[in-house]
Image (tube, rainbow, N blue to C red; front, side, top):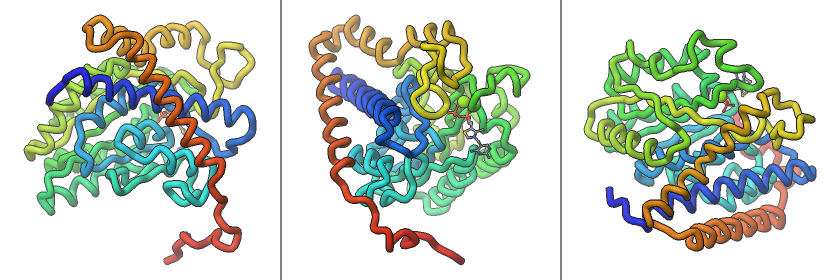
Length: 326
Ligand SMILES: Cc1ncc(C[n+]2csc(CCOP(=O)(O)OP(=O)(O)O)c2C)c(N)n1
Ligand SMILES: [Mg+2]
């Protein structure tokens, strides 16, 4: 892959777009304008952008309840996503799904659902279809550390390994499942080990370092596309907001129970700050370049919010239009 400065700046732009979207959503939730529960992705941008930059448009992605970043990194339409969160007819799920159902088939984002572990088996199904059709597509499934408590993950790892499916399991270990620390529900906080018995490459990455994520993801994608089967990635990262909504705990008045010192330590490891320092050090960009990209991304996000605000709500009579009963 050609990693020229244009490519690297493109990664930064996508990370900035995700960050601005999430932070504007935080403000809109605070003001009461957005009523849909939102699990914000601020702080985890390097995982989604690193992995998705190794994919092709036609490859498949499955997300979870915290998927705004996955959707945007895979090339999902920003206007349609913000409109979806505003519950508007122009949303990517016609305003019926909200923040936890962001999908865009045109760019391979096949599903995101709030049920923890809920898309893992669907992702294995998609990868199986690619294997049967020999269409050379790769499937990526993003899930949190909380999914390691779900039996379906282990069944999925076994089946993917048994049939050598073209799939990459990406566990975003942000050390908490809602308000529970990982060490209250697992003996060790290292997760990559769980894939070892299933005979697939598995590793633990610094999920706040986009180039580390991209390098490993690229190898995993090549491995899958060449018919060599699945890979497991544990990307260690941290959400800068609370579990759901805009909490940041720093004021000490919120429901986020994570210690303030821990949040501050991770703020210092912010993936956007780390990447911008790297780009400047490597002379791939000046701080002026980066500021311009950051501000342009903000303008795009403001336009998307304006689009969402001025879009129509679904008609009351069409409430059950996309509801199927078998
Ligand atoms: C099967 C199931 N159990 C419980 C919940 C409630 N729940 C919603 S999000 C969440 C935590 C998920 O944590 P993790 O997978 O680590 O993702 P994170 O929120 O940290 O990104 C839980 C328990 C749920 N949605 N589905
Ligand atoms: Mg978690």
